[in-house]
Length: 446
Image (cartoon, rainbow, N blue to C red):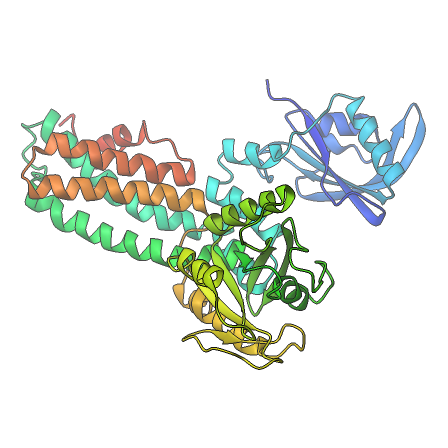
């Protein structure tokens, strides 16, 4: 039996209103036991009712209850949302009363999980809920809302429908060879269909590099030798004294983080310890963390001191980061620059000079300004992208098998693998879909 669950749905703290969400087969009945006012078990769905939450005949709070009757609710179950006063004490008292009267505390994400299990949301919609909540700019919100409105689901469904049609026809050929009206699936028949899907998937994967930046921001690592101005740059970009700035080399011994928006892209900045040879144990640990951060970063800000000649350590960092997406930043132009590098951005973190050029370079290198032209033809996170890549590689193997004139029943294995990988993106089970397709697309009992 499904439990009846409840949880505080608004941010914890003092405010005008707190909302406590209750859900489960007996949710309306259980809330009604502690509610003095209209009989909630007899009201219509999607209605609001004033009354009091009671405990042992004592009024706990003056509340409004929104009633949602299954299946017309967020998670497909009976739901009541209690709007109580927003004090910490009174909110906890209402919650405690619910827990003492048949409810248990909901686990993290359990309401969304129930919505998925009750087919009210697919996995991409469930993921987009948190993306909407955590949006930090206009494009992030737009991309998340698009997925919440099933754009990602519909994108995947087009591929799965094509593959399902192929699989159904292959099964008919294998299991019902006497069925004369069925299309005979051959290598030549499959090749153009698979090719078309591969082209479309490749475009989606390319677009997804931009969409994930728009929605989740870009992990940006500030690297360089000690005392080149990395911490000054971090503080300037964040417009706060986040990192300690000193003329003493090696002041930053651990990573300092912060986030800021440039236009419609959010950068998650990491100021790392200066990378150089060191015999200091603590400093060496910080340097090792810096090297690990470089490997995992989406974008590198390589900061060099333009007032000094490039040395062996600078050249080493240029080599280490050459295959990463990076912006070379020549800092300290308030002093006389000693060198020039092609494509470097010349700034003074101290005087805030050159920051507009840096902003333009960031927007250019991330291609974020092309996001709105993608028209929803993208995926939203790494999980979805990895599964699309898995489906793409399976179809690529199927194409190679077609070109090698491998038997269709063996090629079907790779096509099924692509179908299942795409199904994992939306959370759809595929086991029964092929059987259903067989009986709806073909009159097999004829």
